[in-house]
Image (cartoon, rainbow over all chains, first blue to last red; front, side, top):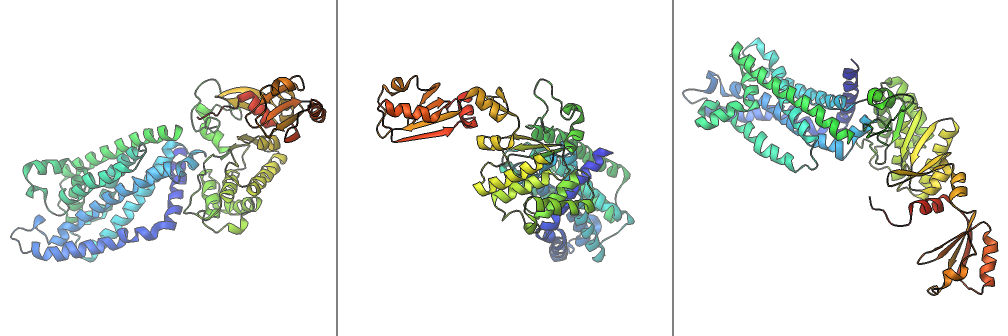
Length: 258
Length: 262
């Protein structure tokens, strides 16, 4: 119980910090959903909808919206668990401030992940509200889409933060974003079904966590999700998140005790 | 310092803090410690007051309690007028005082200070010393590391001289000066390069003589008498300074004058 209470004390720091800097993220959390859905969903959608077989058999904006909801979770997770994590060790040293108090490395790590989880949930909820306004919700299961986004986000934020706790410089972070996050964003089924990719790339896409997250989120919003697929996606993402949390606990402990 | 703060595990031997074992009761011990780390860990995005409050929350204190406590502590370190300012524009001395205020938020039984005044200007140092002295007078136990011997002399009842990770001497400042130095020191400076036989000529005038490139130090119990003897010998140094022996003399005697680059 104390471990949970401790994690919430560290979480509180991040909320206080966010209260000071939220203006910068307001665009990515609230304006981006509207812009993306308008540009891609409606703009590009008018072209896609003319095709004989639109993806998913629905209007393109309805197809792409749940994908964007989940992809946004990945983006928030990956930026929030790179620079802010390393910065809390190296620049602001706020992790060290916490470690001088009763909070231990595991609570410090958990509190930060809780904060990232909150950011993801807020963004996903805003997306869902915008989708509802566009009339894009096809099933009551859509209410679980933010949970799917949260799980996807943690499958990124926990392992990346676990790595960031070992980093001495931020040089690898841009590489992670450029060579992992951006390609996943483009090719893991957010904008088009991965079946349209060449076979090799299609199978590569199936291996990415984002594809599992997008397929899960889209299945919930469009009401097309099968039980087996749902279970598979959740298991895959949960294993990644759990592994990230376990390793992160270790890397945080090692860094803070050094 | 990090081991006493229960942040790093003990690397060897036995360590007991406030009667508890840091390996097992780290969090409990930390709840009763105040820590002023060598590098400030203040949150720049937060205001001065928020820094104290959030830090207090780490100890599980209530917000209501912390609002009073923060005002009290900021007044104690003379930052009450800056309570709503951000940390960013504060001077080094102000940041140090804020770190001290923050470390006191849980009313610690033991306060650990790692070089609390390094890098501060004289005014700021004296203000910090004054606050630490008041804490000491109220009965707080302070453990502090410092490279400034005048700081140690001002604040410490008992001190330990460390050299290359080993304890080389231990005692009160007075005791250490008595044990490892003389009561007074005569510093001689010569206009020209001191002649080679200088040290042989002054030999016997003092208990210990140290010839440095720019001056010669004579450790003696009666500085004025030694200075007179030097004039009687027909030596004419450019300047003669008679001063009391300090902890710095003790420290340099014990750890040597060679530069140690860690």
